[in-house]
Image 1 (spheres, rainbow, N blue to C red):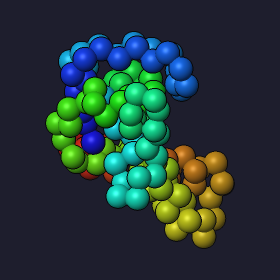
Image 2 (image 1 turned 30 degrees about the horizontal axis):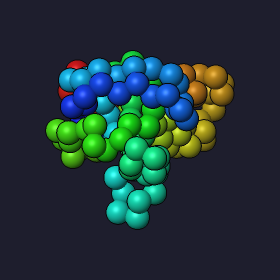
Image 3 (image 1 turned 45 degrees about the horizontal axis):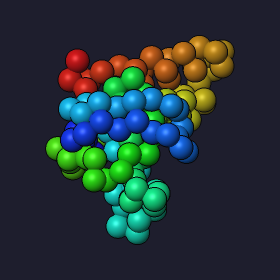
Length: 120
């Protein structure tokens, strides 16, 4: 999910990485919006969600500082690439070619599939 900060957030306690997030910055909500409340951290400033900026810096941000702009779940392309390569690799192990070549082909095929899924 995507959100925009409605005011500056400068984390001062338990964060994954110290960073200042400015009003208007777009962030991805990584964790915390599940129905069971898993991933929600309750700080003294209220309920916080684990968010990541465009540079990959992650921190907990209070829900009151965020305006949700998209409820669509973001695709983790690295995880998708790994899963595809793993499935391709399992199907190709029967072939009588060197293991390194099988791995390279699996990664190349996974990369090509990701490009097509992204529409590149």
